[in-house]
Length: 180
Image: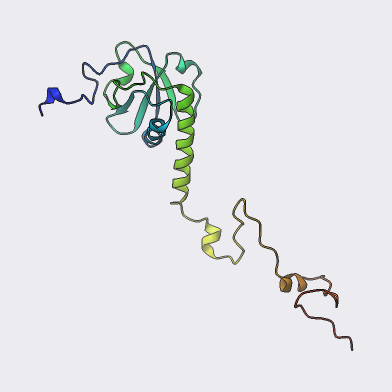
């Protein structure tokens, strides 16, 4: 297959998009997760640029998005007619898709979901807190959403200041000796 027959994967002639759009730039890890989510969503994903270093992805969004974009961890800039915002970049999702630009509301939701997934994944790879690793003997905290275990009858009966169970009480705890 000669080079001219290949689908272009960079900012070559034939892959330009209208300069009338803005670019939302995000870290590549979050952006790749968002692209996967957007491909499965009804709104779809518009063209996406990647930088050559692999640090970030830029989603093409409608013009004016930069004026109101406020998603932490990302930035949004106007794209110029000369393509300055995309110089040195290549296409992850080329512009010849069915979707000219990505809907900013759909992108915002996908970036939020991607960030939650990455926090969850990263949480499984973190070191345990120093207290838990030292084996202080204390009970581990209950998992959120799970009830804390009820104290055992033996533990509650031996608590300081606790009254002994009455003779008619159910349970297997000690009963007072009637002869004393």
